[in-house]
Length: 236
Image 1: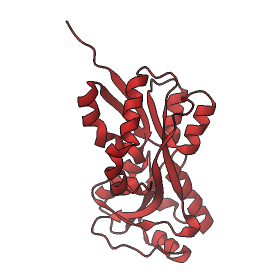
Image 2: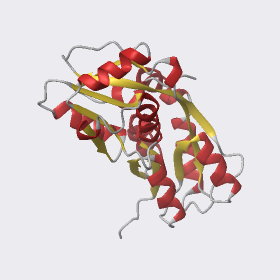
Image 3: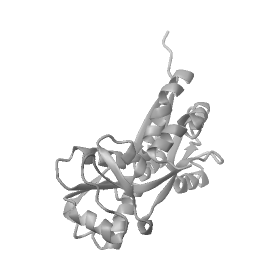
Image 4: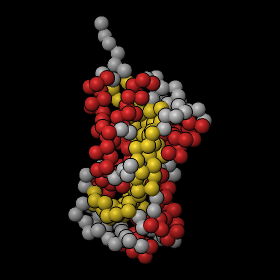
């Protein structure tokens, strides 16, 4: 006789990937279920859910989760915050860390870079914000040849870590910087350009495994993941 292992499906922004992975082994050992998670830009994950992809739990921005609760795609009252994440500037490990403390310094750091890595400017929270920062600085056309957009912050940081260019810089959520080997956080964007995102989970209204989704939610947003969230840059 064969037994079927229950599967809990997660659609998550890349900023929370390490949090889910931190509790995955314990959850799977406790429940006997398996986690299948997809991590990418929050906009892309929202589109997958709206397109009918099987899902038990999502981790997106708070604004998107509340919209999806209102539309009936997520369970009312199920929203739980993992914490607030700032958007920051990164460089490959070992590279000089440029000054970024104000508008002039940030613009100079971007102008000095041969390559600038960042997440999808159409779907990712940090990517959309980064392009808005460049526009406010009047640099979006001047720096067009240096821009290196990737599907999400994690892939952008991993690509930056592999770069062989001498002057490289990146911008994404600080969790995706802190959780990626080979890159270092320089600091948060200057206050004028600050972006702080509340990453929030929600339970899917049509979850195939609602009870397991609730258990996973308790681990992801609760004490079991608190240390890894703090380490990565979540504030809660």
